[in-house]
Length: 390
Ligand SMILES: *Cc1c(COP(=O)(O)O)cnc(C)c1O
Image (cartoon, rainbow, N blue to C red):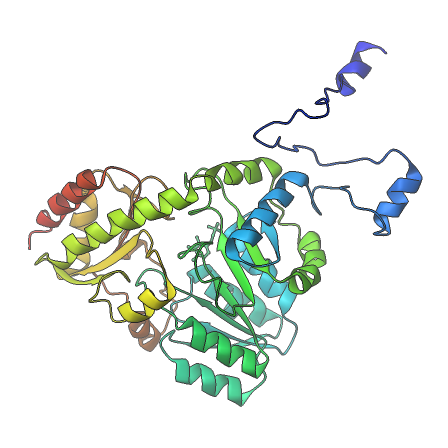
């Protein structure tokens, strides 16, 4: 074998029987072969297991899918290149022309765009309500056949709590599929409810470090089987290296989620007692309007704390500029603390009535609490509140 040939066919190193790596290797390969054409044909006919092309399946992404399905308490999972990829492919593979979708004013901006603008172009109609309007959901389900009910809890950034039991019961009785974006609450929560399909951004709590993007759709096998072909054709596949990084991040998921929730609760308490603050939005606070519902549905309340400053947009700007430990950046659930101001939040396409329902004000600030020492974070927030001048 000449050397240009050899570099393309390097020596194979195989582990001897009974010898295993503690961390599974990354299958950083697009292609897999079988030894013969006959075996390849058997694979293509679905008569034998195996891997062939990484857009369809790969052992590293498959390991992540199986782990996430188990964490969320469902049978199967599909992972995608981003959270929005999981949402867009789910919406495209589950709807057809003339279907109707229920979504909410408090729904994540890009999801609202996908339902209103993208699905709208293909003749899928929608009703957009407030997540608090369970009676409106019931009325909408009674008025016409509904294909999907798409919701989140806690919502972004106001942390409103959806009544998951009521919503899923109504959807199921009406023959609609419930789809829950569970990114904020995480894989360890909400699994006991009759949610048909969970979607997640893996970019947030799963990796935890804010250095990799991914998404997941988690549901019973029958639903995932029906979606798998469309997902392969739409092509938003997660790369095996990204899947490896997310698997690594998940090892510390529980300790991170709990530590970040504990720090967030302390910061929510400090904000609630401060004269510059009009209102704090944190489901773990007894003063949260849906605290009882949150306690019934969740064990951990998450790392997102939002609040309204009495001083409005100008105070918000001063607060965010005065923070030293919080980065002025999008995203959440990572090890570093982040702040988002009203100037950075979307939702401008909502009507005045819908804006009011969303409860975002000129002075709404969203904090994502990281893994820094909580005393340092409290000190930073107190200093920045003093800098708002009220
Ligand atoms: C970030 C986020 C997404 C989108 O995830 P990406 O990985 O950024 O595409 C979807 N839903 C919620 C609730 C999010 O916070």
